[in-house]
Every structure is written in C-alpha cells, then in structure tokens.
Length: 271
Image 1 (cartoon, rainbow, N blue to C red):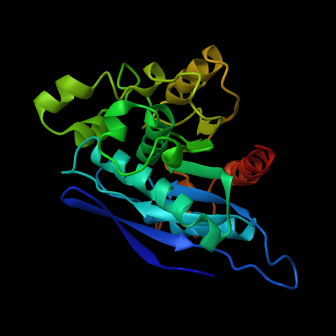
Image 2 (spheres, rainbow, N blue to C red):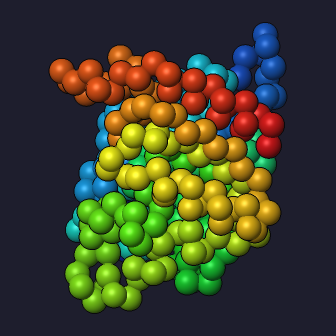
C-alpha cells in the first residue's frame, strides 16, 4: 500500500491528502485499474472528523478500492477555500492515475455531513468559471465521476444546518453574498455527476429533507441517483460500527445502516 501525506495548497491555506493506495500483484493482475474514492469527513466546517476518515478508507480498501482522505481547511477559512482544495485533490489523482493505477472514469468524491456538502459542491460547481479561474487544472481534470453523499448538508433554507453555513461563510458580508449560491439543491444541472445518497429519518442535526431536496433536483435534471433512507439513527453514524462509534457513546452503533457502504460499492462498480 502507498500511504503518504500530500499537501494541497490554496492561497494561504493548506489541506492534507492522505492516500490509501492498493498495490497491484503480478500474481493477480499487475495492470489492474481501480476506482479512487476521495473522502471528505464531516465536522460542520469547524473540524474534520476522524470517525469519518481512516476507518472508512480502510473499509473501502477491503472492498478493492483505492481511497484517500482530504483534511480540508475549515473555520476560519471560508468559501471557496475547501472547494478549491477538493478540486485540486481530484486533479492530483488524475495527475497520478498511471502511477497509482487509478481508473480515471471512476474518481468518486464521498462526503459525510458538511463533507457531503463539500463533495456535492464539487459536483455542481466543477464546470463553473469562478472555480476554473482559481485553479491550475482544467474543468475536465477536476470533474468527479460520481458523488456518495452520507447524511449531507445541502440546503441553506428552512431545513439548513445553520452552523455549517456560518462556519463556511464567516462574516455577515460573505453570508449575504454566498448563502444562496451554497444552497446546493439550487445549483444542480444536467452536468452534475450521478449520486448515491443515504440519510436517516431520525437525524435531528441535519434533517433528512436535505437529501430529499438534492435528490429531487437530480431527478428534475435527469441525473441518475440511488438513495436509501433508514428509519433510525442519530447524525454522524459513519460506518455505524464499533470501529467508528464515539468513545462511551453507543448511539453511533446502528447495525441496520452498516450495509450502506456495500450498496455504495456496488453502485460505484456499476457506473
């Protein structure tokens, strides 16, 4: 396995990309190209959760995927800093696709909660001029081939997780300028990549309406999607297993949601 830390700089801010890249075996297939899953942990744009980082990458490795975790810049960094860092991370994966044996038709961004907002942001903004002007990559180089959105923050409207948007946008002038732009259900187009979404009905932190609103926008634009809504479970479940539960908190053990990653894996393979 190639496990390394790569700095992703944007202006004065630096993100870190942690790679979990599987080796090819001559005994099996020396020329195998694998999907790459770029993971964006959640944390309300205030921190990046360890529970939604390496354990998820290792699980994806076990399914035969390359993975990497982006520890993107959070508060006090403001929009579009993290978006530019994610775009550059996807560009870097494409730069190294031969070296890393990556299937360039299956570079997927996977995000949890506010990280889901970040992943979906690249999905809706990859072809926009405001983003291209800040990058050394072409639009085609930063395009994700699919989105996996896990209990994502999507809307800045009535069902918003307000703390995420306050951290993302910072001061009042930035909020007034960008709040409508970062309400992502309003930004979906026919060029948005296919998406896999999951959420729990019982999520009290980021209401399930966030996923429904994004799914509805995808449907209106005839973008393929798969979505799963589980009846029970708090926000921030990650894998829903012992491996990702919080210390002394059994609420993040939710056996019925643990199949989401297997279903997402089948969906990725089918793209």
